[in-house]
Length: 202
Image 1: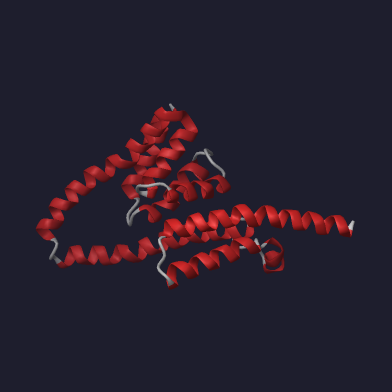
Image 2: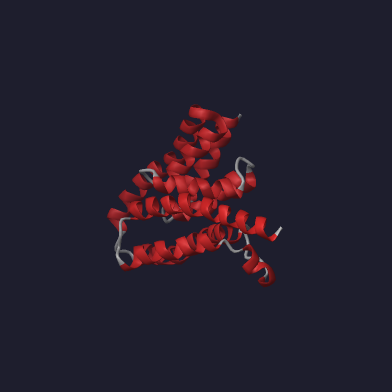
Protein backbone atom coordinates (compact mmCIF):
# COMPACT_ATOMS: atom_id res chain seq x y z
CA UNK A 1 0.00 0.00 0.00
CA UNK A 2 1.42 3.34 -1.07
CA UNK A 3 0.76 5.08 2.25
CA UNK A 4 2.75 2.50 4.20
CA UNK A 5 5.55 2.76 1.64
CA UNK A 6 5.65 6.52 2.14
CA UNK A 7 5.59 6.18 5.93
CA UNK A 8 8.35 3.55 5.94
CA UNK A 9 10.51 5.37 3.40
CA UNK A 10 10.45 8.67 5.28
CA UNK A 11 10.62 6.92 8.65
CA UNK A 12 14.05 5.69 7.54
CA UNK A 13 14.98 9.21 6.43
CA UNK A 14 13.88 10.67 9.75
CA UNK A 15 15.65 7.94 11.71
CA UNK A 16 18.97 8.07 9.85
CA UNK A 17 19.12 11.73 8.76
CA UNK A 18 21.83 12.76 11.23
CA UNK A 19 22.99 16.34 10.80
CA UNK A 20 19.77 18.01 9.74
CA UNK A 21 17.92 18.54 6.49
CA UNK A 22 20.84 18.79 4.06
CA UNK A 23 22.46 15.65 5.45
CA UNK A 24 19.15 13.85 4.86
CA UNK A 25 19.09 14.77 1.18
CA UNK A 26 21.10 11.72 0.00
CA UNK A 27 18.72 9.49 1.97
CA UNK A 28 15.67 11.14 0.40
CA UNK A 29 17.28 10.91 -3.03
CA UNK A 30 17.88 7.19 -2.51
CA UNK A 31 14.28 6.60 -1.46
CA UNK A 32 12.41 8.70 -4.04
CA UNK A 33 14.72 8.45 -7.08
CA UNK A 34 16.62 5.18 -6.82
CA UNK A 35 14.65 2.79 -4.61
CA UNK A 36 11.13 3.94 -5.54
CA UNK A 37 10.89 5.60 -8.97
CA UNK A 38 8.63 8.35 -7.66
CA UNK A 39 10.78 11.12 -9.19
CA UNK A 40 13.52 11.68 -11.73
CA UNK A 41 16.77 13.34 -10.67
CA UNK A 42 15.70 16.54 -12.39
CA UNK A 43 12.41 16.55 -10.48
CA UNK A 44 14.35 15.86 -7.27
CA UNK A 45 16.50 18.91 -7.94
CA UNK A 46 13.33 20.98 -8.39
CA UNK A 47 12.02 19.49 -5.14
CA UNK A 48 15.10 20.77 -3.28
CA UNK A 49 14.55 24.25 -4.68
CA UNK A 50 10.89 24.29 -3.66
CA UNK A 51 11.68 22.85 -0.22
CA UNK A 52 14.34 25.51 0.34
CA UNK A 53 11.99 28.34 -0.63
CA UNK A 54 9.21 27.27 1.76
CA UNK A 55 9.21 27.72 5.56
CA UNK A 56 10.21 24.85 7.81
CA UNK A 57 12.83 22.07 7.83
CA UNK A 58 13.84 21.01 4.34
CA UNK A 59 13.46 17.26 5.02
CA UNK A 60 9.88 17.66 6.23
CA UNK A 61 9.05 19.97 3.32
CA UNK A 62 10.50 17.38 0.94
CA UNK A 63 8.47 14.60 2.58
CA UNK A 64 5.26 16.62 2.27
CA UNK A 65 6.00 17.47 -1.35
CA UNK A 66 6.80 13.89 -2.33
CA UNK A 67 3.75 12.54 -0.50
CA UNK A 68 1.50 15.02 -2.29
CA UNK A 69 3.06 14.13 -5.62
CA UNK A 70 2.65 10.39 -5.09
CA UNK A 71 -0.70 10.10 -3.29
CA UNK A 72 -2.26 13.52 -2.78
CA UNK A 73 -3.02 15.00 0.64
CA UNK A 74 -3.25 11.59 2.43
CA UNK A 75 0.17 10.77 0.99
CA UNK A 76 1.53 14.10 2.24
CA UNK A 77 0.28 13.31 5.75
CA UNK A 78 1.73 9.79 5.64
CA UNK A 79 5.17 10.93 4.44
CA UNK A 80 5.31 13.83 6.89
CA UNK A 81 4.32 11.64 9.86
CA UNK A 82 6.89 9.05 8.82
CA UNK A 83 9.60 11.73 8.66
CA UNK A 84 8.74 13.39 11.98
CA UNK A 85 7.96 10.36 14.14
CA UNK A 86 11.48 8.95 14.68
CA UNK A 87 12.89 12.41 15.37
CA UNK A 88 10.33 13.03 18.12
CA UNK A 89 11.08 9.72 19.82
CA UNK A 90 14.85 9.79 19.39
CA UNK A 91 15.29 13.46 20.34
CA UNK A 92 13.27 13.02 23.52
CA UNK A 93 15.41 10.03 24.50
CA UNK A 94 18.68 11.74 23.56
CA UNK A 95 17.73 14.93 25.38
CA UNK A 96 17.39 12.98 28.61
CA UNK A 97 20.64 11.08 28.03
CA UNK A 98 22.60 14.13 26.90
CA UNK A 99 21.48 16.19 29.90
CA UNK A 100 22.70 13.44 32.20
CA UNK A 101 25.88 12.21 30.45
CA UNK A 102 26.99 15.07 28.19
CA UNK A 103 30.37 15.45 29.92
CA UNK A 104 31.41 11.84 29.30
CA UNK A 105 34.37 11.43 26.93
CA UNK A 106 32.53 8.59 25.16
CA UNK A 107 29.63 10.86 24.17
CA UNK A 108 31.97 13.61 22.96
CA UNK A 109 33.93 11.04 20.94
CA UNK A 110 30.78 9.77 19.20
CA UNK A 111 29.69 13.32 18.35
CA UNK A 112 33.15 14.20 17.04
CA UNK A 113 33.12 11.08 14.86
CA UNK A 114 29.69 11.86 13.40
CA UNK A 115 30.56 15.40 12.26
CA UNK A 116 32.86 14.37 9.35
CA UNK A 117 30.26 11.84 8.15
CA UNK A 118 27.60 14.56 8.17
CA UNK A 119 29.86 16.83 6.11
CA UNK A 120 30.46 13.97 3.66
CA UNK A 121 26.70 13.39 3.26
CA UNK A 122 26.05 17.07 2.59
CA UNK A 123 28.96 17.24 0.12
CA UNK A 124 27.85 14.13 -1.79
CA UNK A 125 24.32 15.44 -2.20
CA UNK A 126 25.58 18.91 -3.10
CA UNK A 127 27.90 17.58 -5.81
CA UNK A 128 25.07 15.60 -7.42
CA UNK A 129 22.97 18.76 -7.60
CA UNK A 130 25.91 20.83 -8.92
CA UNK A 131 26.58 18.34 -11.71
CA UNK A 132 22.89 18.18 -12.64
CA UNK A 133 22.52 21.98 -12.59
CA UNK A 134 25.71 22.81 -14.47
CA UNK A 135 26.04 19.86 -16.85
CA UNK A 136 22.61 18.18 -17.02
CA UNK A 137 23.98 14.90 -15.67
CA UNK A 138 24.22 13.29 -12.23
CA UNK A 139 27.96 12.64 -12.55
CA UNK A 140 30.84 14.80 -13.73
CA UNK A 141 31.02 14.45 -17.54
CA UNK A 142 34.19 13.63 -19.43
CA UNK A 143 36.56 16.55 -20.01
CA UNK A 144 35.93 16.45 -23.76
CA UNK A 145 32.23 17.16 -23.30
CA UNK A 146 32.57 19.33 -20.21
CA UNK A 147 32.39 22.71 -21.96
CA UNK A 148 29.74 21.69 -24.46
CA UNK A 149 27.44 20.46 -21.66
CA UNK A 150 28.03 23.40 -19.31
CA UNK A 151 25.06 25.65 -18.59
CA UNK A 152 26.89 29.00 -18.54
CA UNK A 153 23.92 30.90 -17.12
CA UNK A 154 23.58 28.43 -14.24
CA UNK A 155 27.29 28.81 -13.43
CA UNK A 156 26.97 32.61 -13.58
CA UNK A 157 23.91 32.69 -11.31
CA UNK A 158 25.64 30.32 -8.89
CA UNK A 159 28.73 32.54 -8.75
CA UNK A 160 26.69 35.71 -8.20
CA UNK A 161 24.55 34.08 -5.49
CA UNK A 162 27.63 32.67 -3.72
CA UNK A 163 29.35 36.06 -3.85
CA UNK A 164 26.31 37.87 -2.43
CA UNK A 165 25.84 35.31 0.33
CA UNK A 166 29.49 35.21 1.40
CA UNK A 167 30.52 38.84 0.85
CA UNK A 168 27.42 40.76 1.91
CA UNK A 169 25.66 38.13 4.07
CA UNK A 170 22.37 38.85 2.31
CA UNK A 171 19.18 37.13 3.34
CA UNK A 172 19.09 33.81 1.41
CA UNK A 173 15.41 34.34 0.59
CA UNK A 174 16.19 37.57 -1.27
CA UNK A 175 19.09 35.90 -3.08
CA UNK A 176 16.83 33.03 -4.20
CA UNK A 177 14.09 35.42 -5.30
CA UNK A 178 16.66 37.48 -7.19
CA UNK A 179 18.22 34.51 -8.99
CA UNK A 180 14.74 33.15 -9.78
CA UNK A 181 13.76 36.49 -11.32
CA UNK A 182 17.05 36.63 -13.22
CA UNK A 183 16.47 33.11 -14.57
CA UNK A 184 12.97 34.11 -15.64
CA UNK A 185 14.49 36.85 -17.79
CA UNK A 186 17.85 35.40 -18.85
CA UNK A 187 16.88 31.88 -19.95
CA UNK A 188 14.12 32.97 -22.40
CA UNK A 189 16.45 35.71 -23.67
CA UNK A 190 19.23 33.17 -24.23
CA UNK A 191 16.85 30.86 -26.12
CA UNK A 192 15.70 33.77 -28.29
CA UNK A 193 19.30 34.77 -29.07
CA UNK A 194 20.26 31.17 -29.88
CA UNK A 195 17.24 30.86 -32.19
CA UNK A 196 18.16 34.12 -33.87
CA UNK A 197 21.78 33.04 -34.40
CA UNK A 198 20.70 29.59 -35.64
CA UNK A 199 18.31 31.23 -38.10
CA UNK A 200 21.06 33.46 -39.50
CA UNK A 201 23.48 30.54 -39.83
CA UNK A 202 20.93 28.37 -41.65
